[in-house]
Length: 361
Ligand SMILES: [Mg+2]
Image (cartoon, protein in one colour):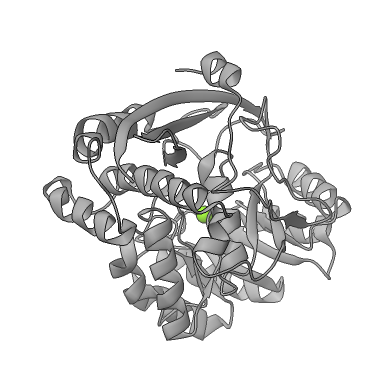
């Protein structure tokens, strides 16, 4: 493929989640920031991608426009993984991870979308074959803090057919309320987003065992301290998950041998290319991939295709909020706790251009 253009579309899509809007993010959070990339080839094939942009939209957009796009426009690209490696090498002076890799992720996803469209197949077919057409999904709730809200939203998601529910609660009373709302049979998880000190973690982990948590996510800072995470998992017999903030396989090579679940995020880790390599790392070390996907743009669609092709991925993360609109109304949302894999060429994402105009930031 020869690249004619790379365009970046910054968006803000309002959403509702039933919470007070505080807790997960540094400020009150009511809009989903997105940095969408549209790549067009000289023969007119269009590919879509996005880079992580929550609370960093302008930085991610600038990184794509100023750092990555100039290395992409006009290029003849035959081998996407090799091109991804080339981008990483050319940009390593800006730091190997974080915003730089979010920007590379956006480009990589769009290139894979184009490659699959050129082949006339869904991405899953191109990267190894569609191994499954239905994916188990879990409800990923925001942090409500108020135990009664936690109980009622957990019960609501279970009534909709989810068999696994992830809280983002950090206080024991809220996590206990989640267990009450879920009942005993549901797989319950909490994502701590690194909020506990090591001392607090040691105090609360016996309760996580008592409440039969399916995994505890990013309990302590830093989330890439594989030794500490591994020792917590071993000491308390509760699975630990981490990896949404890790980029490239280099970081997963450290955590995969120590913890049960690793969590690459396709719009952060380095795109489809690095996500697939992380699946290889998980297979090598006997860990399981639990993809991070709390978003609704091209990364959502790419995650579905990756999971269809790679059975090492256990469950699809569905962010349990209500965006004002979905950019592509055909988005395969979970029904009765599972996502049906679309059978469209590429990643399948075809946005409504009127909505791209409406939400342009
Ligand atoms: Mg998380």
